[in-house]
Figure 1 (spheres, rainbow, N blue to C red):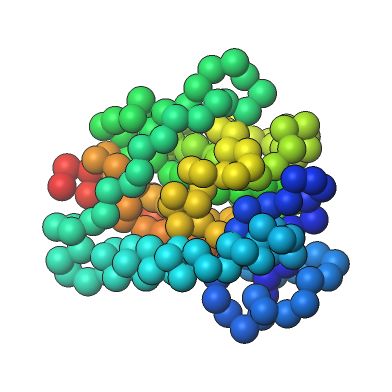
Figure 2: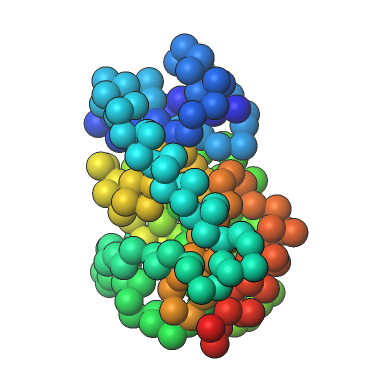
Length: 214
């Protein structure tokens, strides 16, 4: 199930994936596994034309991260540099070269993210910094995002990707949350749509480590 983005002006950039539930009329936010980026706005409606491109990216990632030969043809993650939320510095994926990384796209207005983010925060604390996580706050208000992260107990670095969320959409992400697991060469070894479970999280970390020297 998907939900419409409740953001005030300016409207959000793009809708999420293609299930029939995505095509229901806009209304109050509803619970579901993924939430759309502004599908009830004029820009969101216009952006339906680019959803198919995002779906193609997702399909390619899924096909490349399965099967016995996957390690030889893993897709490379796009590099990005964004401002760090609540801090003066920048966050760059290239700055973590040589290290496996989890990239989590989320927003404070995303209902599934309210269940997922505390799980990621807890896992990061328990790992003691041995697992690198970058949060990407997509199409959000900075103040609301910082309050959300504080309540969730997030200690990993979080980048801000405000409207039009160019980094988010460059990853083919049109619905939140979504998570990418990268090996030490920053190849995508696992991609999860919707809120992560602990089983998916530990499986993704295992894949990151297994391909570290690949």
